[in-house]
Image (cartoon, rainbow, N blue to C red; front, top):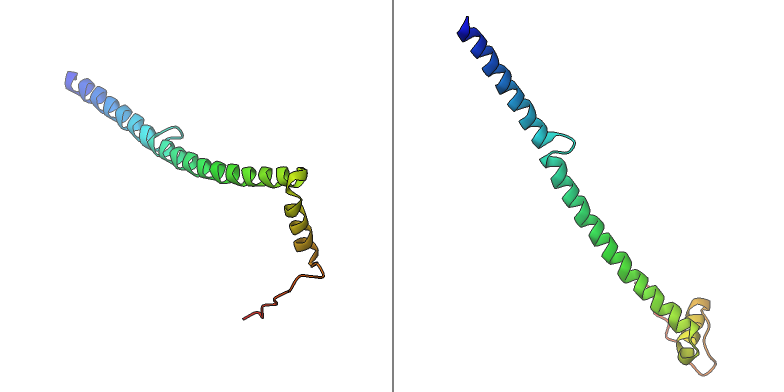
Length: 97
């Protein structure tokens, strides 16, 4: 009788430990979820750095377009986007391969 109770208690404790162990590894907040969150954080950090670099480049372009000091840059961008050239410029047309 006593052995049956101790066996049942032991099995119950073992089942509880296994249950908690499985959830500690595979649960919603377990080890595998933590590893996935770390990978997601690394991806987001990479995206953040890439977007920050792009933002700095755009801010530089805006600053150059707003400033009167770099009129050559504004002229170059306008001619490039409009496909225009000055009369004294020589154009080189490259044939597509």
